[in-house]
Image (cartoon, rainbow, N blue to C red; front, top):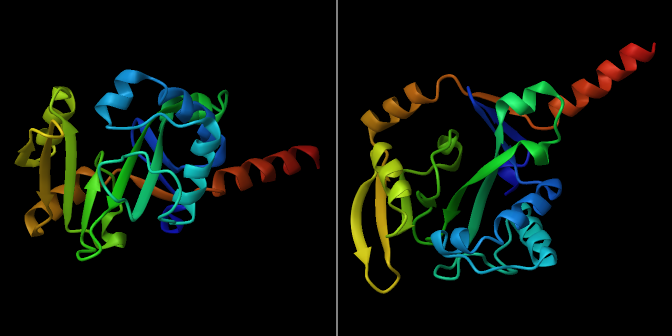
Amino acid sequence: MRLNDEVELRGRVVVLVPYKVTHVPRYHQWMQSEELQKLTASEPLTLEQEYQMQRSWREDADTGPLRNTAFCILTECTFIVLDKLRWVSGSYTEEDCMVGDVNLFLTDPEDSTMAEIEIMIAGMTKLGIKTFQAKINLENTISIAMFQNFHFKEVSVSDVFQEATLWLTIDSCKRKWLIKQMKHVEEKRYSQRLEEAIGNIHQSTD
């Protein structure tokens, strides 16, 4: 998604960065796990399809292979989660710092204020989202409990798809709560760190 292509969010223990082509091999490696495929309702993709997926996400496209086959995903905002301790050390590549990802799926063409979410992130005000929707495999009790801790409420259970649907509607009280929870998060331009590193190299050679 172009909106978050240069957005980097720095928290206390993790950093969220846009999904780049350099992240694809590790992401593809993760998604070969049958357990992850089951828990995320995903179909296995080839490495080339994964690169195609990354390109389609970046360009905000609604074509190409869709990982979740149960829903028509119109737009997806994706961040890669990095281990901040490793990331700030400078001793590891971003790929080696990867610990997960977070996504917003804008699936309803009739309601641009609703998004299906995989994990809580800052920055939802820029997208104008007022309702977050999480669809979780019924066997994934850890994720269900995590979202309930984030104040999500169960609204339905599908016996066909074996998944629970949870919603979080952002009213004025929850917005204040979210802002308080995320006040330590810094938003930076993603390429800024690379530019700073290049500048430091030039200074050291002068």
